[in-house]
Image 1: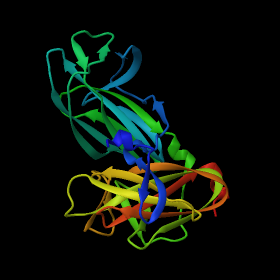
Image 2 (image 1 turned 180 degrees about the horizontal axis):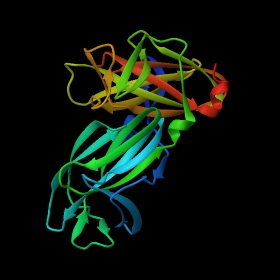
Image 3 (image 1 turned 90 degrees about the vertical axis):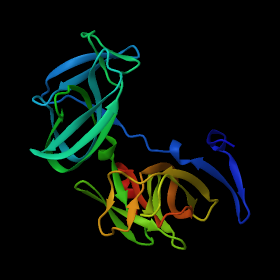
Length: 304
């Protein structure tokens, strides 16, 4: 049976009631993104993509895209290399500076966009979109984004508005805590281990976002499938099937023998009243399952 056929189908386990198996790849929480106008750039350019007119901001090595951002939050940066009409593929680098210091250089590969064109330049074609994500630490920070070398790149920058609207919630029982680090941002995750579930009390109605990361042993390679078991107040367990590789940007602050997996997340609609959710690593080869819980900030007063 294909993964498409598995979605939403009930499965039977010998030791438990029927449970719903959900495919993790389709469960990532969609953030809300707000487009940003840079404080400065080399030029504002117009593209047509699939019949839509879009504004991008051009940058070169001498004229970066600059922004002032209040954190903590997250940025999504869309990049398109400005390519000659006869170029079939190319590589380019994007340099990110924060508060006057180099923070990151990304090497990207691209080819001409199949659906995009410049409205005022027939001699060049925009490259296919390549995306970058940036975690902005607490406080106000000045960012500069520019291509390295002699290339010219067009950017669109978005702010994750959902990041302002959610707050983390600590469980009442867990198998330990690991602090995971992305650049300057430290995030505590609570662990579900074999024989040690994570219990969380929530008062609904609200929406609970469950961020999961499998903790890889350094000997593990490739994608790993894991299953998260969830039951509410002792009711029927629901299984969430996830698949992830190791994260390219997240590390464990206090341990070198494990590597966090890429983020996989899902939402739970919490009904009215006090609810207790139990989370466990139902299947998977990782050392443990790392969990982080978020609720809308406006509902925080209702969380024990």
